[in-house]
Amino acid sequence: MKTAIIDTTTAGNNVILTGIPGKRFRIYAYMLFSESQNYFIWKSGSTALSGQMHMTAGSNAAIHLGDQWPAGGMPVLQTNVGDDFVIYLDQAHHAGGHITYGEVTV
Image 1 (spheres, one colour):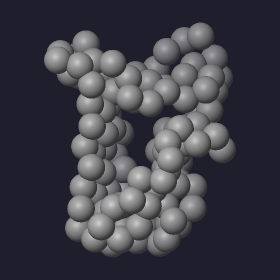
Image 2 (cartoon, helix red, strand yellow):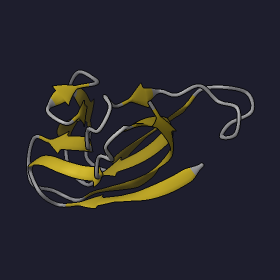
Image 3 (cartoon, one colour):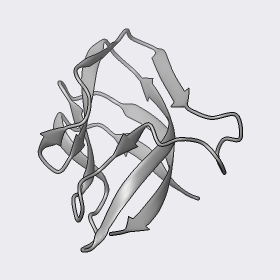
Image 4 (cartoon, helix red, strand yellow):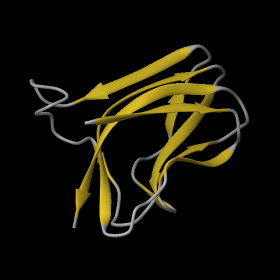
């Protein structure tokens, strides 16, 4: 398992993981903090992986699946082969947190 930091203040698409040819990312867990009221969307490149996830100011979201997290958990999100893993923010504000992920050769 690998981890990556989420730390952005820019509205629109923000690349969290840069795509790798021949591989996809499987996201096993995430924790996200939002400084202000907004929504975010997880994406594989330009393709939405989630709907609008609304957050209130000062809120956070955390998710993982599986009793043996992170080693044996189920992925909660998965990118298409070679795509970036992206978080879309509807407005400029501070969003922070981290993800736990793996790279899968296809």
